[in-house]
Length: 84
Image (cartoon, rainbow, N blue to C red):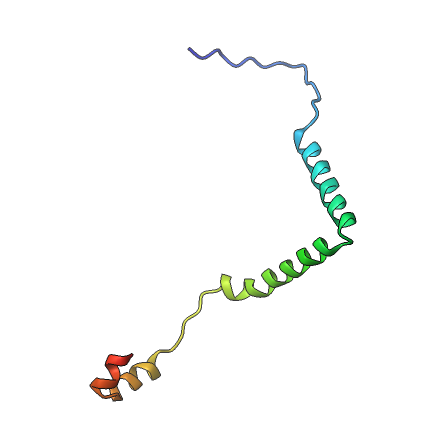
């Protein structure tokens, strides 16, 4: 069913598709930067900074002390608790 794998001592150098893809991506970015006067690039930098600022808050686990909220709810009358 499956053909056995045969080791071939002759190594052939082949062009990687990754290199071509990277060149095309950089050419595309360069084109858009030149077309709109760098506006797209500035917007990307702003987005990157925003993500960097929020990363600390979104990647850490936070625990809050709820004792004051529980204390406040226990002191409220039944009518006020229904609103909450």
